[in-house]
Structure formats: C-alpha cells, structure tokens
Amino acid sequence: MMNHIAAKASTLAAAVCPKAPKGASAPVNDIKGYVMWGVIVLFFLGIVAGIGGVVAGRVFSMPHASKVALVGLVVVFVAAIGYKVLPAMLNGIMGSGCI
Image (cartoon, rainbow, N blue to C red; front, side):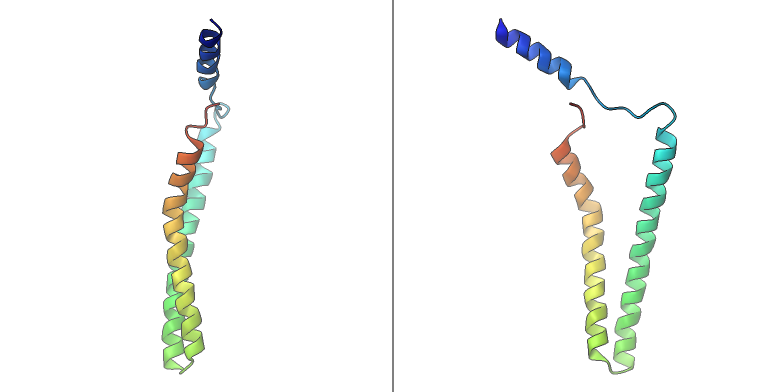
C-alpha cells in the first residue's frame, strides 16, 4: 500500500513543469535569437582576425604574431564546437526540467 502511494506521489510530482508567464515566450525567444546571432558574428570576426593575424605575421616576418593568431583560431574553433555540443550535454543532464 505504501509503495503504491509513493509511486502515485512521484508520478504527480513528475507532472509539475515550470512555465513562463503568458506573453513571455516571444520576447525570451527574441533575446535568445539575438544572443545566438551575436555569438555567430563573433565567431566570424574571430576567424577573420585570426587569419589576418597569421597573414600579417608572415608578411612582416613576425613569427610570434603568427603563432598567437593561430592559437586564437584554435580557440575560436574549440568555442564553436562547444557552442554546438554543450547545450545538448546540458539538456541530457538536466532532462526536461520537470520536477
């Protein structure tokens, strides 16, 4: 009998999910879209700056500048991979968000 009550209570608790207030989803989606767009633009600018740094380092015979720019390019690519992988990892860890 006690297990039946505990199972019913856990099923009822699993049905409680957080919801945004009415009318909040559209502005939140807009903000998330702007942030995602801004991050993609920053990735593009980082790649352009890194390639420019490598080329400038080679043209002006500054090997350290080229190495730093190359490290910057690697950091941008690692960040881009994290941008795609980390949300899926967090979703897997946190689940649906229901209590």
